[in-house]
Image 1: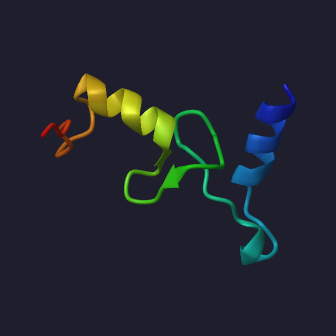
Image 2 (image 1 turned 135 degrees about the horizontal axis):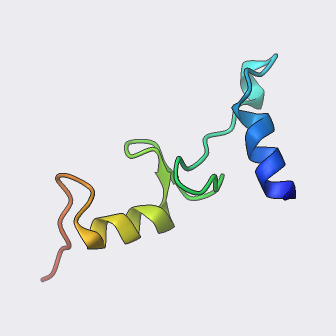
Image 3 (image 1 turned 90 degrees about the horizontal axis):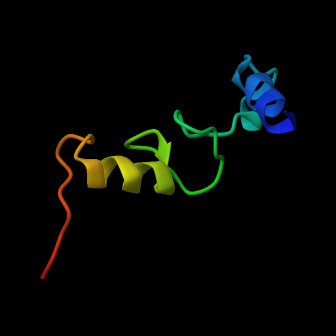
Length: 61
């Protein structure tokens, strides 16, 4: 409940731009954020392995 309220509060327009925090669009996680995909590393990995992120393939060598 507290996390949900915090995410909702951060989505409102902030008075100062420095207070803005990038958050994952899927789960709201503030850390491990990838700007290009607008999601955290955990959600990115799960969606990429399922093939839902266009242009991303699993590498192997």
